[in-house]
Image (cartoon, rainbow, N blue to C red; front, side, top):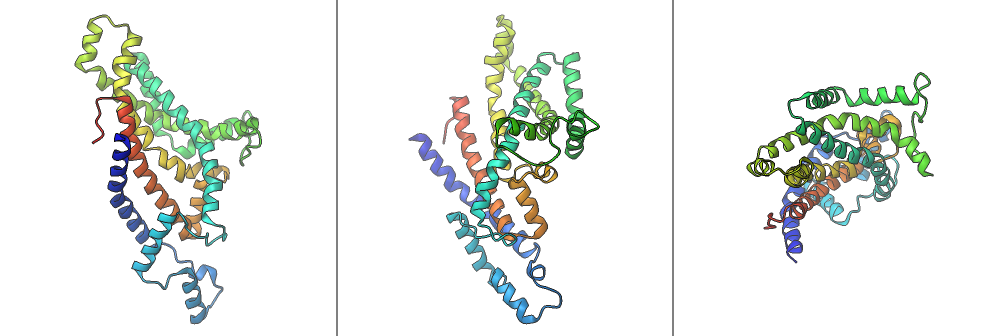
Length: 317
């Protein structure tokens, strides 16, 4: 009951955030974004043809009316059809979001788990060669561009000049083996880049926790190192870890990996978003921005609930 009441309060509190994000995005996309009028018309259109197309696209409606219509679309989750393909946006999202999840989740999960493990090792040997080596490799990963990492892994694992083990482009999940073949290179590139940022962040959190009085006391009483790191350090680091992980989920669910999907030709929501930006497909862009804002509110709610789960001292008020 307490969680339900708290959830309702957080949802209500998140409404101004959604309204603010949608208003700003509406201004940027609709009033300062690309105008499809002349893309849909041929050369030298007449004034009547221009007016007809603008009416069909809804460009002739007043600002307030268009924004209220946008809010109705968010509430009903009915964003109409794509201006480029005429496909229902709900169908586009249902078709592409699972692809983005299947593409991004392995790298996201492994990147965070490996980051936590390496951070614990680095913190345990703080100031010594394992710590310096891990932090040096993390700095290298952070300094390499994501695009360079993608190209490097593709040349190494997918080209005839390398091992030629995995497909260069495309996406196929007809079997688990095919899925592994297509997801391996994007996952390795994601882990390579994300691992540096994750390791440095988690190491900073662990090192800060290691300086607490209760950790020094437990170490003075002879608590074994493994038990010390698990019970006294890692458990107390869960709040910043949960915050980082949960607030990354909306970007994975909605935005997908725009660069990965565009580069490898993977038909996920990131590729759809990129195509919508290029073509000026406003309905698709509005749907992606609105759902991302909603998911951030949901992520904020889940984060607070997870705080209570990992630390019973946290009160949901």
